[in-house]
Amino acid sequence: MNYSDHLHLIADILSFNSQPSQLKKRLESTNINWEEVVKISSQHLVLTTMYCRLKQKKLIELLPDELVEYLKNLTEINRNRNIRLIEEAKSISNLFHENNIEHVYFKGMGMLISNFYQDVGERLIGDIDILITPDALDKAYELLKNCGYDKSKGFNYNEKGFRHKPRLIDEGKLAAVELHRHILNDKKQHFLNRKEVFLTAIAQNSLYTANAENLYKINVLNAQINNNGHYYNNISFKNFYDNHILLTKCNLETKYFKARNKYFKSYHALFDYWQKNETSKDKPILNQLQLLSHRIKSSHQVLETSSYNIKSTGLAVKQRIGLWLKNPSYRKHIWKNKVINKSSSIFIS
Image (cartoon, one colour):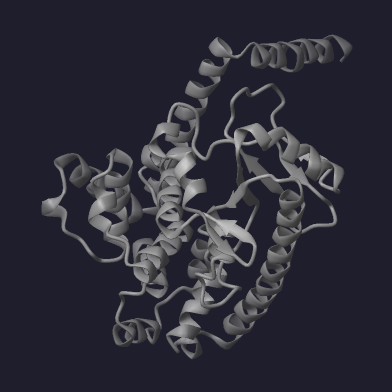
C-alpha cells in the first residue's frame, strides 16, 4: 500500500458510509503498514477516533494485538481527559453565569458538550473555544485571570482586532481557554453571523453550544479561512470526521451549504472525494481542477509536503509584509528584537 492507499483506508475507517464487509477485506490484507497508518492518523489528530470507529464497526480485532493495546490505553487517557474538560467548562460557565456574561462553546468543545460522539474518548481536544459578546469580552478575560487562568500566550506585538484574546492558561487545568470576539479572521467575519450563533445556541446542562448548523458552518469556515485550508487545498481528517457526524446525525442539507460561497464549494469538493461521494461532472470547472490537484498531491507524500512547504513560505512572507506595512507595533517589535538585539550580539561577540 502506498501513501494514498493509507489515506483512503483511514478515511474509510472514519466514514459512516463505507461498507464494513469491504473494509474488513482490506484490513485483513497483509500489506498494510500500520506504522504509516499510526503516523498519518497522528498527524491528522484522529488516532483515538480511528480506534473508536473500528470498535464501533466491530473490526478492531483485525489490528495487531500490540497496536490494539496501545490505542486502547491512549483512548482511555483521552476519555478521562475529556470528562475532566467538560467539568472545567462547567466551572467556567458557572463563573460567567454568575456575572451575566453570555457565551457559547464551539468547535471541538462544542461538539463534545453536545454529545455528538458515541465515545467521549473519540475526539482530541486542544483549547476550549468560547464565543463572548464583544461588550463582555474584557470582563470575561479578567474574571478568568483572577480565577487561576493567570498565564497567557499571545503575540509579541499588538494584534488589534484579532479574533480572540491571548490564550489563557491555568497550570492546574488540562486545557487553555480562548475567548473569541469573532470566530473568523478579520475581513472574513461577514461569512458567519455572530448574532445568529448566540440566538440559536443550544443549552446542554447549563452549557450553551452553537447549534448543529452553526457548528458545521464554523467547522468549514475555520478550516478554510483561519487554518488556510482553501489556500493549501487540503482537508483535515479531524475536521472531516466532525462534519461527517453533523451531516449524518443532524440530517443537514448539503446542497444548502455547497451553494453558499467559494469556501463551502471548495471544501465540499474535497469532502465528497474522501467520503466517496464524487460527482465531479456536476462541480464547477474550478472545483474540478482543485480536486484534480488535491488527488495528485495526496497520491505522493513528497509532492504534498513540498507543495505545503512552498505555499507556507509564500504565505508567511505575504503576512509579514502586510504586518510591516499596517502594524506599527509589529515594526517596533522587529526593529527592537530582530535588528537592534542582533546587532548588539554581533558587537559583543
